[in-house]
Length: 112
Image 1 (cartoon, one colour):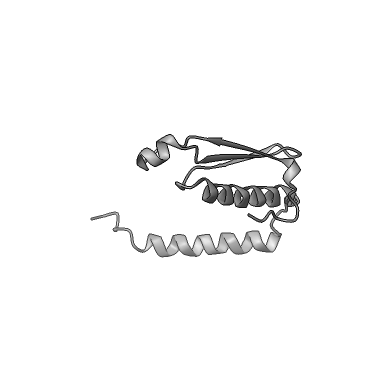
Image 2 (spheres, one colour; image 1 turned 30 degrees about the vertical axis):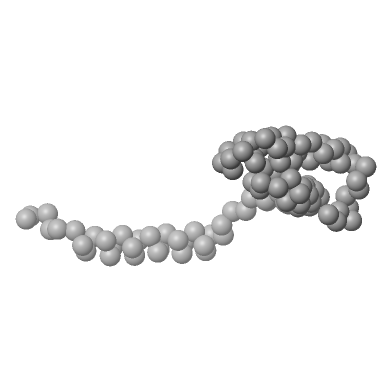
């Protein structure tokens, strides 16, 4: 099991527990569930999908690496509100007026 370069073994806390769900006696009697905590960041991930503790360890490590990468991303820039230009407003109103005229031709005449 290879650790990603940004994660050190001394920063990890491994916990093993009995996973619930289907899988029969093998799953109910062995501690195949894995909970992995990254101590410096406090991020905790768990994996209980597989019947093998080894496979769950691999999945938990992948999830931790993904969670750390997500946390390292810079926050998105705040959106600066903008107003539409006068010409854009005029174009929008003209388009709405044309659309309304097309729809009005579909109506039944009033006298019927």
